[in-house]
Image 1: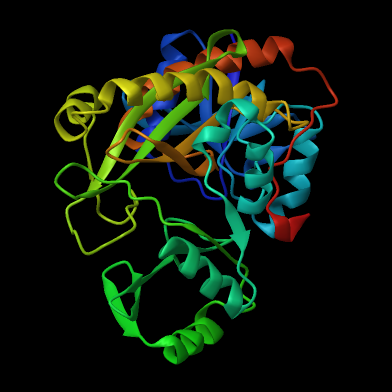
Image 2 (image 1 turned 180 degrees about the vertical axis):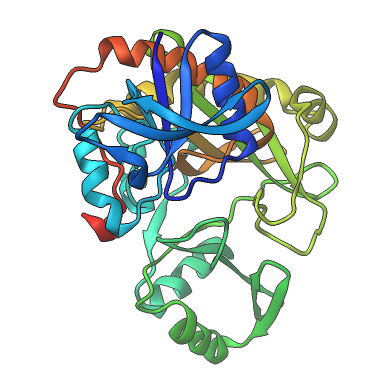
Length: 349
């Protein structure tokens, strides 16, 4: 029997965590949720929250063999996290900033065809030159999450159209410069060519490829599915901003990408086969759950927009939990101290 601990800053048990605990128990393991304040190093005991006979209860547990870290650390808990990490393998390690990730992606030759060139946007001329070259560009802050702070800029009918979600502004060049000075300059933005990821009826899309380690520590494709934004005025689609989800991706591709779905399926298979192993080789610590946000146009071309560590799992909680238990069983046997990790946020390093 193994013991798996879920470490969070707060002791609220979500549906996703309940499902993980129940799956672990069904395989003969113990699993519980705990916070740093629940740990007693003197007795090597933890006051954890678990599920028993369908009810939530608290009880004392032995130290876990593997810790599922939920990627949030309070400053006052840092030393306990580090002390635990000296003796127990942690999951859910960080992958770095968007710029660091982009540099690592460029080193993977097998996926170069799926990458969009990303450049720093430090001066107004950077933006002006890119618009002249591409006609439409995307501006992203390096610290963006859930699509926040992203703008599209397009030169159309002698005007610059700037959009942020459903907000739309029309600028002349001087007004665009004022916008840049206020919103973009010195705020760590990058820019890239706008990639038109949309259905055959012009609904904006983004596809998520959810991959996790499973049995034997091997990568497993959990799900590939689209988010669809039914508001045609919004250029950016994001799962956290009300976009619709369909889990019948095969039917979706056949209906909304009718001329290219076979090409898309082949490319998705190639990305899954080539990306995770090559990406992992660039890190000293183990990665175990990754989410790739992909754009797909009507010609079947695919662009990797973003890579996320510890992506949200929502409706995929059960298959993810099964893969996690398989992986944690393997990790307990194969992880040897000293354990390498990267779970602290930048401000606590």
